[in-house]
Length: 159
Image (cartoon, rainbow, N blue to C red):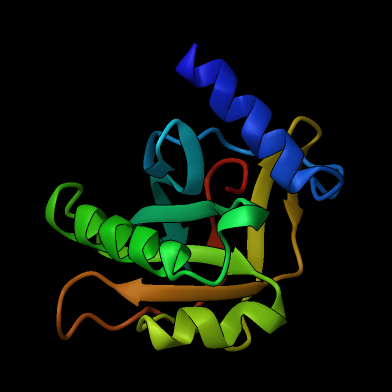
């Protein structure tokens, strides 16, 4: 029942934003509830991708959303902080990686995420691999970890 509720909630929030792509399902979710209502959500996809030819353990962050009635209360920030804590401590990922619109860069930047300049993102779709033009941001899960240079292959569908 909860999965059905989450799918319906996400469909309403993201209606019309699928860009005609197949998307990965989240392996994990951070859910913030207000009583019986889901107020905010972050999905996390655990995957090993490649940067250049180097394997990189990634925690993909997607599905970041707050229901309109609950916006401007800091819920997305709280959910993102909890997601970052989880991917660093529990998943032991090397980097968090998210794809976002340019207008969301300041929000994620305040949380420590960095834009990957001049990056090329490769994703898998039913018809094969394809390039996906996008703004990519990463968060090093451990101090001193530097994002490697090169083409980013998610080795699966985007999140």
